[in-house]
Image 1 (cartoon, one colour):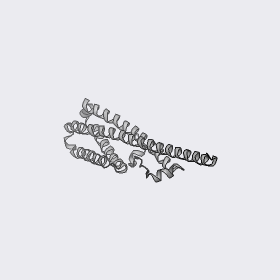
Image 2 (tube, helix red, strand yellow; image 1 turned 90 degrees about the vertical axis):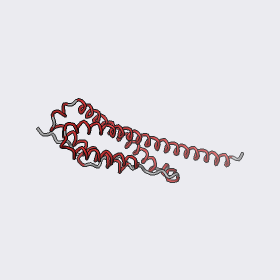
Image 3 (cartoon, helix red, strand yellow; image 1 turned 60 degrees about the vertical axis):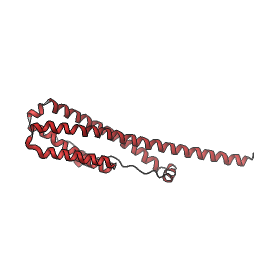
Image 4 (cartoon, helix red, strand yellow; image 1 turned 90 degrees about the horizontal axis):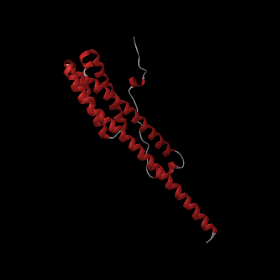
Length: 188
């Protein structure tokens, strides 16, 4: 065979292998992002399941705090609807509202010593705190994978393949609630 033809075939094989490698790496990162989003969903579902139990426990002690309990329930429902929508930005906003309203329930416990000593309430508070920590870890894991995926589809030459195959940037799951970003003020 002609050496020029062999050289051209060799170059074509190398180009095809590089394209296959780039495509496979994009798919791998896309799947990691989807897995990370699934981890967030699992933790959010756990939180959604704990909230009605917490509300019922608090109801018995704080009958005249119905407004706070209703806000928590409404925030939970909004967050569940946002989760069903699949938009990370809308879901992050709904989750931030839910986190704020949950803080109001824990603030209520300060006014009710019997509630604060209730073992069910303490257990639910511990479970929710553990779940919040897991949500934060899942959020970091998701955002790390989104960062890697977005970087991969933006850098040359992978951006050429990503553009042709219609890979799009993913949204980060960010905290937009300014109160959560501020330092905690400790007063004595």
